Image (cartoon, rainbow, N blue to C red):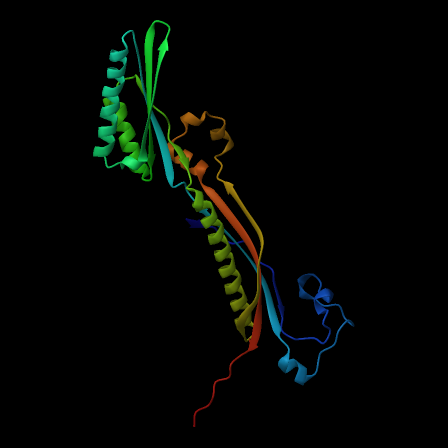
Length: 260
């Protein structure tokens, strides 16, 4: 998972409390207030009024696919039904045994068979669907099967995808990183003006979005089957972005006590 640089954030700081309870309506762009619409409150009121700092933050995170599926298809057409089945099952057994020897778990292997009559012959097809979590192992196994099996065996290009919960986890991660970015900005602002950042008063996620990574126009014009594995992974990568708005309490700088 990678983090991209957060775009600049506009920070609004209000360090002096005002008597007008509707002061937020009097604020204009850039934090400048219109004159004549409010006046400073007394010292007693200022001691009890809450001073606030308002910040917004954004974040973008991404995650590549965590699963890939490959289909291996075996077929045979013969005049005798038993010979057709024998031809397919022999290669099918070799494929499944090779997968188990390479460390592929049985729950990640699905086998389907189809047997039918075609004119005066018998036709049988079998498909082995293999789910991988390690893409390097996937490439090694596919290369091995291509080398060992004849042309009657067809291996499909890998299809990359995400497990159901991975997108939701990515959304949450984007929100958390955006909140952390906003909190750091608020801390820096308070340090700059000699104040102490207090507890959060409001945390609001204003915008979220996610999208799949796109390859460039030149590559997208080519057939999907001609893309490299890395290009397929890049195309299946999901990005998530979040924008948040936070309000923190602002406290005065703590004075150090003098020891006698």
